[in-house]
Each structure stands twice: as C-alpha cells, then as structure tokens.
Image (tube, rainbow, N blue to C red; front, side, top):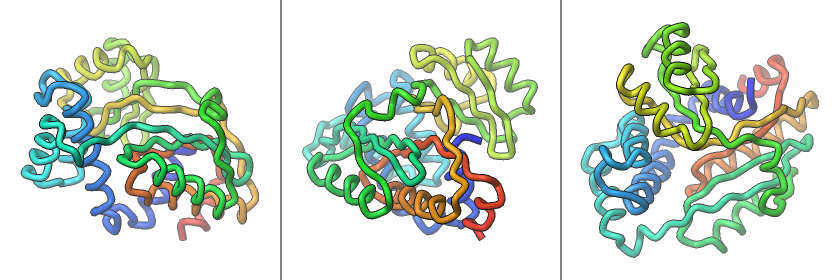
Length: 250
C-alpha cells in the first residue's frame, strides 16, 4: 500500500477524524472559497468547486456554511485571499514528503512547516527537491458501496482512466491530469458524484521504514503537518510493515 493510504488508515483507526472535525471544516472551507474564486461560483460549470462541495457534504458540513464559503470566494472578500503553496522535504528514514497548503500568510505557513519538519526528525527542502519521485495524477475516489470492483474497473477504463485500485477503503481511480474532468464527468454520469476528485501526487516507488522508532517519529511528523490549518494534503512515499503499523495504531 502507498504511504498516503497507510497514514489515512492509521489516522482512521485512531478515531482522529471525529476529534479533528473543526480542523477538517477549516480546510474544506478554504478549498470551497478558493474554488469559487478561481472559477465560476456555479458548481455545474466549475469541476473543482463541485468536488469541494461534495467533500464538504461527505464531512457533514452544514449547507449554510458551504454557501457562505462560496459567497466569500465569489465576492473576492479580503479574508478569502488564499494562495496555493507547496513544500517538499524528507522525513525520518529518508521518506520523501510533499505538503500542499492554502495560506493567507506565506511567511507564517513556511515557518510552521519548517518547524514541524525540524522538530520531528525531518528537513524541509527546496521546491522540486522530492516531487520528481512522484507522479502528478488525477485522482477520483468512490466509496466501496458505489459499485463492485469489476464494474468500477470497466467504467473507469471506458472513461479513459489509467488505473483503478479497489479495497475496503473504496475505489481509487487515477488518470492523466489533463483527463481528470473528462473521466470524472463520465463516472459521475454513471455512479453519481465521487467522494473526491482532484489532482494528486502518487509515489513512483516506496521507501521501507523497518525501524519502529523511525516509523513512530515519521507518523508524528505527518500528524503534526496534517494538524496545521493551512495544510490541505500531505503525501509521502513510505512503506511501513504491517506488524509495526499495528503496534503504532494500538
């Protein structure tokens, strides 16, 4: 399993999703605001906004909260002036990490991300220092109950996707970045709106982390990064053995 999936599973087993509901809402509101500002405020004509609304609904965000965020973005209000930034670096065990953020203060965010790396066994690098080890892909996720693996695979390939991975966590469809909207629209016509649809980073290879202390420190770093309100997504190329994962999540 890829590093980002392992991290997600561990966080889920810890029950962290409920405890971080407010932080999740903060991140979703920023994505809604930026999506509405970067295109039309009509989700039917703005695929990114449509995906952001779907993600907000999946998180049970109140309808009026969603609408306020869209209005802020569409109106270009001062407090909606977020910009997208990317940070790259290495964590314990030479694991490559990409951090994507939406911030209204680059200096603050850079300082916090640098501090997170340095205090948890990592080091922040320059732009493009690790991204060459990842592929930029279009990523679409559907819940397991949407369809069986064969039906999703056939529909995704017919829509122009490159690959489908089905597991207990759901169906993960990947395609070329330029094909994301076309593939998403074809699948949406067949299965309804996906849980998420966005550009993503996928590791080309994974780095084994077999030392339990290094694995624990790495997970702490990823957790600190994910806790940051400015951080939208964290991707990493680690591979932690199952027995160590189980002890870490106990």
